[in-house]
Image (cartoon, rainbow, N blue to C red):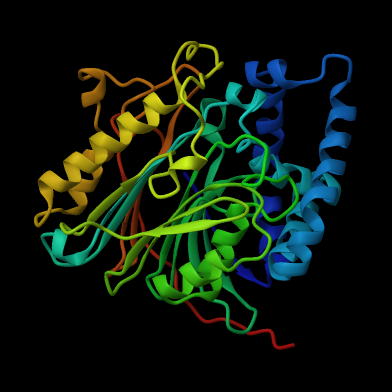
Length: 391
């Protein structure tokens, strides 16, 4: 997986990411435009350039003002990213907006999305130090287009971070900061209504803001639960070096906070445990090719039950290796990976990357693909001198 070292202001870091990833972005668009997901979603009467114009307009109208008003530093990152990628700022807003589209349960049920996160407090681990880990599940076509960013922010009061994301995204789906705070996020699917809206801030940008400005789990929980402009829905996993760990279930309009059980462990997939009424109704089926007839709840509940059972069984003696082995699990498939296994193997979507974090040391192990097939590689946290911008 490509590792980018980015310094400077948010604009400069976004621009450098875009410059480094410009060719990868071009290849990603090529693969996306030739994919079955695009063919199934694209309005047949519109040529691709007009669709991109419409996406850019929708993104600008739906998220630009909210991000600019509430997260101006992240808005500057998006402007820099657009310049670096060599695309219009409007289209770059549209690309960030796609995260929200993939939370809406309608035609987007034709695009797979999952993720399994697991957390162990110090009392649950062999070394008595907290561990967190996660499988990142999304459409398979995105697998070659992931990137690790090791950033040193120049803005006053902003912390150094290491995050994992896609080449064209300003936000991130998992990361850790210089204080040992880890934040990750899983996707949720919702019908349109009070819990889902198109206007607001995508959750991956909120994640980056939390890492850049919060020192502890409590601070991050406060930022997320009080954030005034959430748009979509999901599950933030948050942990720190003191061993405080929480999962925040969130929609556009409400939140619930869950803590580890008496064993000091917890897992999360893609359904609500605290706010169960927000879940998709029984009988909601995927329509992705290769997943026809698979009820949405089957995969998320299967992965949750497996991950939690293995955590509970190992409680008190969990190691980095234990976390890796849980993320490699195929037991729900009888030994073979499928859409319902923690290590997800689907025709259209599966585990694109696997991440294990030792919060005390700041070490991150990343497997670029299904962890049953790809070795975990160590990514050291990057610290260094910084030039601070003052306003």
